[in-house]
Image (cartoon, helix red, strand yellow):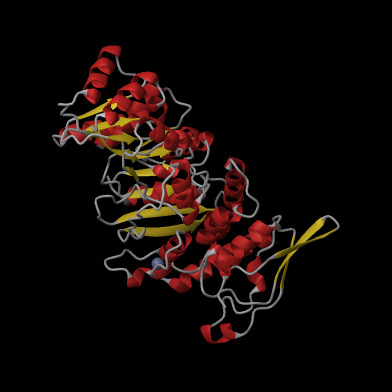
Amino acid sequence: MVGNRHGYAVVVSPLLSLAKDQRASAVDLGIEAEAWNSSIEPALKRRIAGDLQDAQTTLRLLFTTPESLETPDLGDALRAGAASGLVKLFCVDEAHCVSQWGNSFRPSYLRLGEARAQLMPGVPILAMTGTATAAVRRDMARSLELRSPVVVDRPASRPELCYDVVFREALEHERKATARASDADEEEADPTLQDLAAFIEAQGTKSGIVYCVRRETVDAVARELRGLGADAAAYHAGLGSSDRARVQDQWKRGDVQVVVATVAFGMGIDKSDVRWVVHHDVPISMEGFLQESGRAGRDGLPAISRMYASHESLEQSVKLERKSRRWGEEGTDEEATGSMVGYVSGEGCKRLSIARYLGEQGRRCAEVENSEPCISCRDRQQHAANVRRWQSYRSASGGTGGVVGVAWRGVGEPAAKRKRPPALGVVLGASSLWCKGNAFAVAPHGPTGPSQVPALKTITNGNKRRAFVPPRRIGE
Ligand SMILES: [Zn+2]
């Protein structure tokens, strides 16, 4: 590689639209930048290809996608540019897309390490992501062929975010009780949507996103919210690209307050004043949850992450998450899903639960400077009572799985009494995954990492599966 004071960085983004937005933002800042993707005109491609190889180039940033890197036009130009010392840096944005652990897995990202070796050997590489567990980091290093990388880490805590969990069964229960007391018609609107509409109304004109797991839910929720007076538009991959672009633009400008969307919405959208993100369903993975909720409060001002959790949606998320796994390494499934279960069902601090999931020691809301208290830290006792009531709705409804929480003597008792060893728990009809998740959730010390969950054995007895937790306290 020849030294050259001229030169540029190549930035790979997972989405074409993201590459375009990033280029526009760089140009606004006075930085000379281009975006190369499949949709640009041949004449523009020729001009950029020329710039990429020009020893006097003034280009500083080239945004592109992994697919474009594999095209001969761009590949040849970059190879020539790198040979002349013009490619100063290869940057992989949203680098968690190399990992099967995230919900944003992109197969084309797997070939980036090879592309770098072929097109620009020896060029420094920078991989960036907002959320990465130890497993995702390992995947990133392996896939991008990083040797002894320098890891620059910032605590994942987002002090400006208030984490909130609302239990849908509890809302339903309340609605029935109120209807009985007032002799009213029980068959009115879905209480979750009513609660959500009231939440949105309380936000005034502040922008927000409602995420749903399925497209059908997106359409229905957007329709119902409009019926309840909210200014909401739907967004999912089933809509035409012009409709999607229109919704996105209207929302970005503030002409539409709420976008109800699948996870197809939001990656790379540069809108710093999103004040709230609601998950109408339990997300498929903790990583997805963190990416999505992290779109609120990017300007550093207080923002809300609220999740409407139900037993059904939690189980659905566990199932979908399993299906989306590309390589099913036995046992490691639980590392991802168990923690989503733990976050939802845990009585302890949500911020701490997230930090532990990411492998950090973490701190409770009160210990984090200027942090917005989570639902548990606002009123620990009330939240714990809500969690336990919610768990009991499941047992009462005769679901397929028991709750291992009942196995832990001391849960729900005063702190002094919790020192007694927990009882042996037997859970009928529960999957080991479910039990493990709930074992995180109800551990006396709050949610813990998967490695701290004691070995959990499943016994098959006829058609009934039983799982039991050895009589040992988690964390000891
Ligand atoms: Zn907290």
